[in-house]
Length: 502
Image 1 (tube, rainbow, N blue to C red):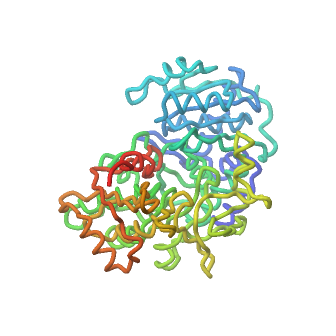
Image 2 (image 1 turned 135 degrees about the vertical axis):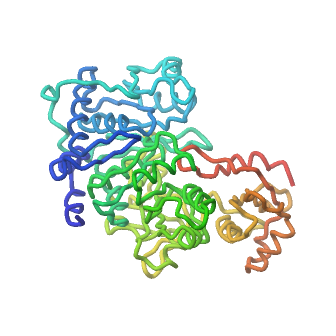
Image 3 (image 1 turned 90 degrees about the vertical axis):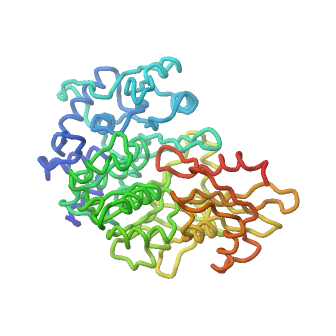
């Protein structure tokens, strides 16, 4: 299986990968949802029919098609149909509204826009009309259909830009990130070869399929020939029934997902497993506190492997399930041979096939790459002697207090060990005397006594934190603000909320 997967990862295009897998295991399932199942052979055949229907609508190679659809089998079929045509597709997270969607449609110059109609109480078709979108069509449970015999040949190469993904845009307008089939295959291959799944595994896609993690995960399924359960709406404990019914063995998404599964495990009576079939939690997209790793392994009895990726580079490093616990707890894993990592003045820079081809805005592209073609990530970190990557924070997440640089992540990792801390974000706030002051914003677990600043600083002193790094402000909140994709904490909202307090 491993050799087969490595052979398939050399496919020129995503459609080549679909075709190769359909030839090898046509009857094996690839996507499961509720009581529905789609096999690898059906994925190829149905995607070709959808491609033919899109061709009848006027979609051609190079046509820009935006889609804002939930995590459904139909969404995957539409996306692969567009890949079969060689169209340029621009996935948009389904929770985005007029401002973000309008920006994506204008900047990408989308000629068609696929929407789910009314979904979760919101009229997406109405929004599309309001925004003046072109070529609007609904693609929730019905898709265009046509005769594949009338299709032009599939794309012959995978190095042209055919994907426009959007950064979160939490502090400004989102950036349009340019990807090719080959860059997405390279990213998914890194994930797949690190986790080494087998044909007997059952995965899960519990995050928005429109996220860069969508093709990342699909490449892994195609390389190793195993299925995943799709969740249109993910929430625990509601989703546990589907995890158990399908026998999911690999789950995850990001740090917030690990915490949700761990909390469900703690609610189980008499030590019963929340998901008996589960053997591995895996994901990335946000920092992972070492204590969370140890708690998952200890209390859930499963392995946890965490990786490092971003919209610009869907997978950079990934933990190895067979690695030492110390490396799995404190690092982001190692990169594949094809990924070059360079540390320049503490910043992580990247070069390799999985790196995007830049941004829609040429000025943003010019600023993002250095003179040797390495992508400036804005992340701080270092490589260990064994080649593992350790992230220490963000360039923008360094707090400068009285001229001294303080890592927010260092303080957060220590506070995650405190029993009265469920989750925490450490931020720098403007301060006339210090330049910035250190503020810890804490979300406490149910039933915990309210934490005080004195208790918090005493604990950090006991953990050996230097005095100049101690928080000078503590805020306790019911819930930290998060985005809708991988549930990242939105620190800019906390800065806005607490900048006027002291």
